[in-house]
Structures are given as C-alpha cells and as structure tokens.
Image (cartoon, rainbow, N blue to C red; front, side, top):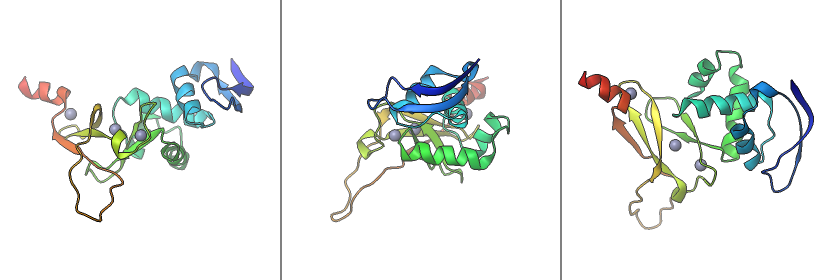
Length: 168
Ligand SMILES: [Zn+2]
Ligand SMILES: [Zn+2]
Ligand SMILES: [Zn+2]
C-alpha cells in the first residue's frame, strides 16, 4: 500500500501538510513522529536514514549508514539528510577520535545546548560509540573571557559486549 498525497502531521503544532509518497510497510510511527516534531518533511530517504539510526542503538558514521542501508542509498543523499537532521537538532554529532564524525539521534527535548549534552562512550575493541543519554557532560570552569559552545566528552574502554567476551 502506498500512502500518498497530503499527510498532516499530528505532532506538529503548525499542522503542516506534507505531501509525500511513502510505502506503508516502510512507515515507522516513531520515525514519522520524530521528523514532524522537528518540522522535517518525511521523505522516503529521510525515513530510511532515521530508522537505520534508531535501529543501530549507537552512533553511526556516514560510512556505517551506507552499510546499514545495504548501499541502496547513495552517499550524497545520506549526507544531505544528515545535514538537515543536524540543522533541525534531530541528531547530534560526536567526534570520538576515530577520524570520522559519528551521529546519534537526540532525545525529543534536546536543543543540543551545553546543558542538554550527554556523555559518549567509545569502545576501543569494536570501535562503536554509544550515547550515554542520561549522563550530562560535566561542566568545568573555563578561563575568564572564554565562551563555551559545546563540550565533546568521550569516555574510552570496552563496551558491555566486548567486556563480556574478554572474560570468557
Ligand atoms: Zn541534540
Ligand atoms: Zn565493543
Ligand atoms: Zn549522543
């Protein structure tokens, strides 16, 4: 079944009418709600990218996303979706020191301000980076005259899966 024509988003306070063509079986309510909450028009590619990010349950790089989507979506389309998501604060980026930026889905109330930022954990074995959503970043005193925009707080070690393998 194909859902087409005007799609009125229920979450959006402006009740904007999105015109779109989405295959019903690909529609995931959580994705639609998250997009409409951030006033992003739900296109098929945006839904695919967001769903892949939510299913990953960790942060992902552009390269990870290409693989998660079985190389069915080209890199520039993924990259455009990512940039739009960042702009609307649907996702945030993390520099985990691995050389490529990773992206994680923000919780629904996140404004990506310093007060909303959380810590991240980079596993040195499997090279995956996880959002520790309920652990805000510690704010340290900065020198007079400096202004703070963001904090990149990354802990390193072994994730639960790799730590368990280590014990065997
Ligand atoms: Zn955020
Ligand atoms: Zn690991
Ligand atoms: Zn995160």
